[in-house]
Length: 340
Ligand SMILES: *[C@@H]1O[C@H](CO)[C@@H](O)[C@H](O)[C@H]1NC(C)=O
Ligand SMILES: *[C@@H]1O[C@H](CO)[C@@H](O)[C@H](O)[C@H]1NC(C)=O
Ligand SMILES: *[C@@H]1O[C@H](CO)[C@@H](O)[C@H](O)[C@H]1NC(C)=O
Ligand SMILES: *[C@@H]1O[C@H](CO)[C@@H](O)[C@H](O)[C@H]1NC(C)=O
Ligand SMILES: *[C@@H]1O[C@H](CO)[C@@H](O)[C@H](O)[C@H]1NC(C)=O
Image (cartoon, rainbow, N blue to C red; front, side):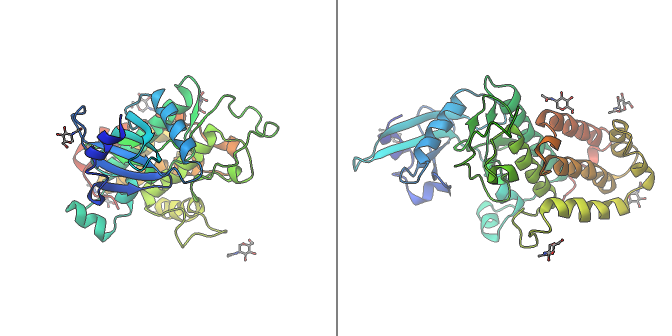
């Protein structure tokens, strides 16, 4: 698409059309004649180191993928602007409900702008968690070459009008040719992979190879954040207490205190626990706690520092679907329950 069309589509990249600013560029909302719905236009900051590469990678990834839980790339622009400078932009479908980060951590200002409180129910959170896991499952196991996202975090999960989650921002993604077989000898560099503090797995900081299990770590943190509403970078966390430790040691114990010990007695017995803990004639909030234990347990298992002990994302999808099914199975009337 031409620079002129984008200029026109965004009212000359006006401030009023600006909807976000990321590390590699600014995102504008716009309308283009050829698309029925509004579009989001990410204009790359080409001066920024890595921006040009991120443009290429993102085009490459999104050209080769198609999934309901990934943002859809509509077109791209690689041209020069009116001053004769290089200009690159990516055009996506516009998703009406912003990003997950804003929903998890609303500020008075963002609430005002929407004029409706941003609160996610337990079920909405679970649905979005499943959406994100499904997107990763697709990227890791169902593409021609496995794709590692490398920068999964709430602000990179966009929500459409139906609150379906779409993973976005593939600027740091890597096509992965030989998955983790021996990450100790084969030190394909993760140098340059910065990701985002709090979500990047510890092995990337030690120069280890980028792998799909790195995404699983980020996913685990995201899941814990979604259900605790605590950022991994919250002030309360430090060297000796991470978000994961907090959930593992503090929160899970407290929840365990309030649920039926008989339920917990079954927890070692593998498969059966799903039915035992999520079924039954229990009422809404009580049942949410039971499901929460399972969900947080998944988050904890995904975010272990030891790469080989992490779950694979396919298994996560299966477990989350099962939790949802059990939750819905006996609890239709409580599905709107506010969950804080
Ligand atoms: C500019 O945008 C308007 C609507 O936003 C559209 O009607 C018009 O056709 C566009 N012009 C060009 C040259 O693309
Ligand atoms: C962290 O733990 C170590 C040993 O367990 C201790 O020496 C250190 O003081 C602790 N630091 C903080 C900030 O709690
Ligand atoms: C849960 O219970 C149903 C029937 O009660 C059974 O068909 C299903 O296999 C059980 N699921 C698990 C994970 O044990
Ligand atoms: C609902 O759950 C609470 C515990 O949260 C329990 O005390 C109460 O008896 C339950 N009510 C029914 C009808 O099961
Ligand atoms: C994922 O883990 C599950 C359970 O451990 C296992 O059955 C499955 O084969 C694994 N899938 C992949 C693609 O590694």
